Picture (tube, rainbow, N blue to C red):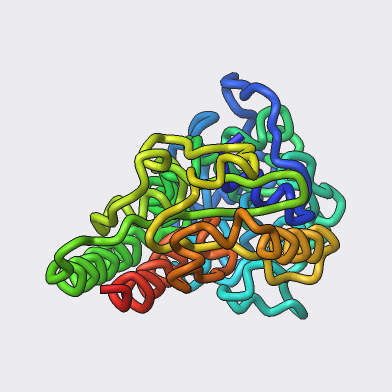
Length: 319
């Protein structure tokens, strides 16, 4: 299980463990639009499907996919449980955005009642649940596995939404921001090594390069600890092995929502901060531990931009 998926599992969002994907040809949704002037034919993980040229009522079954949709200027009408509360940086309107349950086993009755004209999901979550969804509305399954592939995921969302040009603008703006970060960090004689850490009751871990935040830092050329320069960073870190987290700068992902697990996670962070071994970390001693929100865990161009803002503020400031 990837760092990002476990992050939201621990946050109180529904379980993200999907069964093996079925690659059989998808059934044609009974509700697929038929007017050729208002539909497009696109390919997705389970075949080809007609989708609206300009979908207006989009339900998203995937945490990062929600942000990719919002980044294209589309407000979804349905999202997975926990998204509105925890992904506050997306400014979703809780009075108009419904939560439709677990991405793997969503509430089909609730989805049908919302009358969507497009449903977006991920291959590694939907699997056998695709058929019932496709009978409700055109359902596009993104052939993406792993949140470090967020750029490809966003591109596929843009295609499904009929907004590929907007995707290109997002990518261009991101590249420009990367250059800004690199220009600010270039004068630093000894670039600091950055650590990305998350803490839950009984679980301490660090993010490697095959994670959302890890991929953004790699794009920006940010130095990482050797222990976090692998695809998956250290998992289940013991107190005796806290040196695996010990960068010059530490970004500590902290859930800000009101779920029980978010509260438990914050309490666990405070307990760890009180431990003598925590105080021995050089990032702690240098006062370079920065608590950041869920935008470091999972997302698209919005969160990637926020991560780069954090880097400009804290890593550049550490020179």
